Every structure is written in structure tokens, then in C-alpha cells.
Length: 146
Image (tube, rainbow, N blue to C red):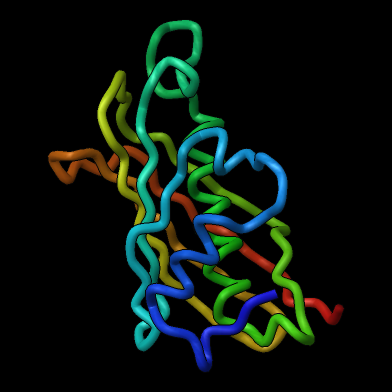
């Protein structure tokens, strides 16, 4: 895995955006990491809202919001641990869909609520272009030995 200690912001973003040899769900949904604050341990990513992430009523599928949030929470944990020794694995996600969205771009911001040795709890806010909160998620990751 990856560890931020000796990496630049640009190297970390390049890694996150190319993570995985195959086509992953994050790549399929066009999730793109656009910023990471190494000092404050936060990250930002975007995801377009388009028909492939709609539910039958033509609005953003809640599962797509969950994928964006879980991608953020998992990445946050795995980037800020020693990937030579540990994995961060999701164990719980609580996602509140607060507003519908038909098109445009979502921006997700992730930060730690608690960062312990064996458990991380993160908060992910997903907003639209107007800054309106579309989804609020908390996620728990257990940090396990490789």
C-alpha cells in the first residue's frame, strides 16, 4: 500500500487516481481525487452526476453517493497509515441522503473524527456546485495487520 510520510501531494493524488490495475467501481463512476491536505489529514474528490449514477426516477442513486463516501473514507484511512504493515477495512457506513441531484458535479470532503491505532472514524460531506449538502456520511474502518 501507500504511505504519505515521504510523498508529495501530487504523488499521492496520482496514486489515488490510478489505484488498482483493473477498472474499479471508483473509476467506473469517474471519481477523481483533486486535493489532499497531508498536514490536516483531509482529502477532496469529485464525481459527476450523470445517467449511469441515476436511479429509475432520473436522480442520483443513493448507492452512488455511498460509493463516493466509502471511497473517500477508505482512501483516507489507507493513505494515513503505514501501508507496509496495515490495511484499513470498512466495517460500518451510515449515510444520510439529504437532497436530490439530477446532474452536475459533486464534491466530497473527508476528514477523521477519530484516528486511533486500530479504528478510524471519518466524516464525509458531499456537496453540489452551490455548496448545498447532498449527503452526510460517517464511516468506520478497522486497521488490521497485513
